[in-house]
Picture 1: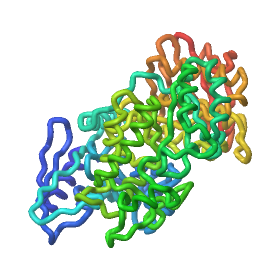
Picture 2: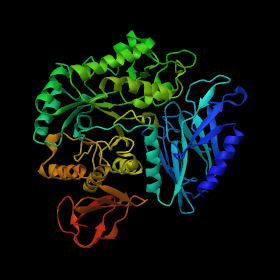
Picture 3: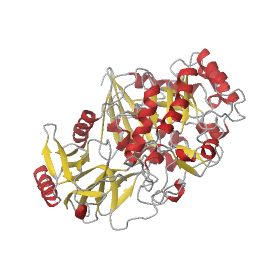
Picture 4: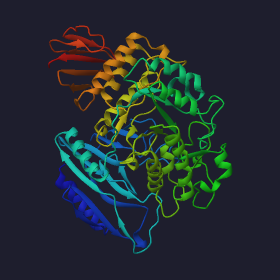
Length: 559
């Protein structure tokens, strides 16, 4: 397979679909179509053809954070825990092909080929991947409507090929950056998050207790108050009895201690139990029959304080409401870090989006209204978000599932991060979720699991947050944490094998080699002269047994 063959299939499909195209100097295509009702559908085909075979390996993105797929055309494997086209996110699974979004990259005849959308301003790109190597690519209008004679300007699209997967992905990133300027932030994003020890039961005293320990660690700047401070989803300015003085006192105490307050908010959803739901049903999206419908009737309903409903950001009153919330947080409380969660729900299929919005439009309008208030000096992190619809509108992006202290989730999160490593500092700052080193209740992990987890967080080189109660960490834990933070500060070049068993981190005066064994049996590895264990600083023998389910970070000075 080569680029000329892919282009030939592409041009033929465009001709068959009466789609005009312009081949841009940037190696992208701008497509245009005049709508004719007799051939119009919500999904418009732009590419089809046989590009591989049953055994052709590929990777494809999902619409939302929890969906990623690898494997082969004939045997696709879910990497993320919640594929878009399977329950609980989809009630209508497709058993004939695999559904993907945004882009696909596959290897055929020792060439890496990528077909992908380089913009996402209004619409999303959909891929159908068939077991025999057949591929279809669509642009979805995502709920917006068109009339006869309307001119439809598609999202930009590219076809890239090369010998190196990494080089192809870097080229793809540059094309995306041309269409969506990467938001940057001047400060290091390091700190502590309340969720992974206290969950929604967090109290103001829990924040104070951890703040006292954080004061001793200058490189850990942010104190993130996660879900639990509010009464209900949607009532973000009504505080629970676990925060009897509201957020004002807690945030002021954090600032007075020389730390930065950070806040979790789910600005696109509204709980049925909330005051906002009862007072303003007119703020909420409805189905195509005009009925008020909770999200669980259309997709996954949510994880807490359900059922959830979704705000309609085509309604100017909704924008006024959400901006009032963030003015309070930003202008009055001086919070400059926001973790926006449950973002996917602003862009779920099945709602009727008003003012001819698509589901992408609804989500991006919500983000834009928030950035208008906080975007000049704050860090905005997307979580549980639609991936490409977030381009250019978040500083950071959660690119993996919630961490759970067990082997399976730690391995899963690692592969989610590895496949999205190229996005870091190109599309946004990657957030690999929190570093957790201690067991909690039924969450129990072995020492090998925690060592592998530390190695993955080291490689992530993005947002760095701790998730344990800080009083449970000892001096050796903080020594390891400081080592990771020291690497994070430095300029570096990260390269890796396609199977993600080996990573090389090239620093100014030394080099780190990270070896993984995700298998069920021990395997032998051979190290180079001068090998030192990065975390323990102990000299290593050249012949090492890498235990099943473990990782080792090897430091080579002046290598």
